[in-house]
Length: 499
Image (tube, rainbow, N blue to C red; front, side, top):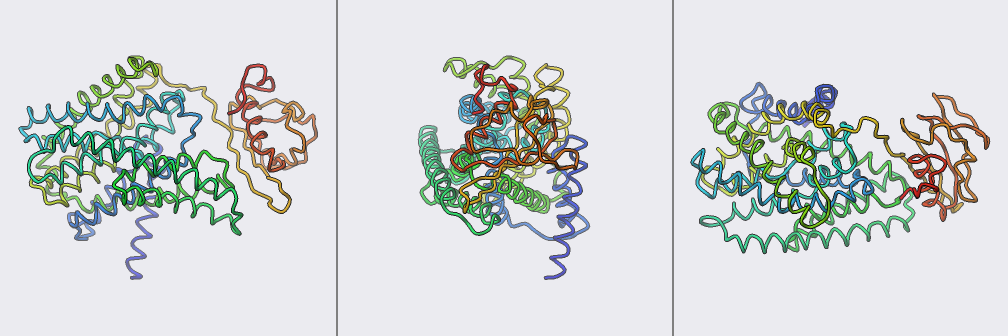
């Protein structure tokens, strides 16, 4: 046991160190984790024998639930709210268009039978939340475009998992289109209902139960995420959609120790990603991959140059027809190229393999090669493509990061506020913040030096503030601080309310 613990810790430390390399190159770190798995597997120097597709599937689905929970908790609803309708169209009609286009193309080009062709299309239809979050959150994109990509990657796992499972479990041939559609709608509806029940209920409970230690709040939130996941699964609903919806509600509520909760969720998601990708790398057989290189590259080119663009164009047409927005051709091109694949397709490829479906191991190898090759191609080029298309937003200021610590006995809250670069709070004097009564800025930390401010103290970017207010006024104070950060001391005159 001690040897295995030592090896596991060494792998985690190596994976953490590799994040720096991935950050510099613009590649998702999943590639390095997959490489570690191949190195440790039976084809590499590690020689670890692991071929249990059913175990890999179960562990993979749990890891994806953790990753989706982190995605929901760290997604800013105010940034993605306007993008959600378009993202939902991409995650439903866009998925259907992608599956159909991919199936027709690989059936014609590679000679796959229709069931395998549909399976390959469904497995590759979903963009990966971990890959999208790790790459796109470093890109200076307009909030609406970034919101579409983030929300799509959170929502589109659910329908693809449903379709892949139905195709894998069909006794003979593919299930009927009508049956697939009805079951998909039913599972998505149940998953949404469970998420919308667990999320607000969790917010209500955590706001009213004063836990004795701040470290219990992150654990409670993660437990609520799995209540949503398992509850939806037991009711034959989409656990992934339930997790994402519930954590989206929890992550955007005014909970105690919210920043600590998000930090804990990010750490848990990183650990889940490391374990997941290393396991999937160990599951692959390196000697078998060269045999599928050519068909995998053909399928990958079909996906990137045909199926994904078709899904984006179809979605853009529906978005316009439904009058929920307009996607310019530049945005459509970027959305087509930014549909990154990662762990989700590889995990989905274990489902038909675990079900004993003929040809499923070859399908897994195809998907593995496609994810590795096209992540290398797409990831580093996104920043340059955004600049080329003119869809980048280099001057976009980051929002305020506000953490609150409850002071239950005093019925007060202590807010810790960080002023980001580009904030219009820079240069504003404290009295110009016009904070509500019974609220005071008690301390300013600037370049490592702390001091007690006066009303005429000018705030600067990178300052950290400690603000004491009553519990009843906390939300009002946060809204006012965000409003000033976005529009300056005259925010109210511009109609900015910091919502």
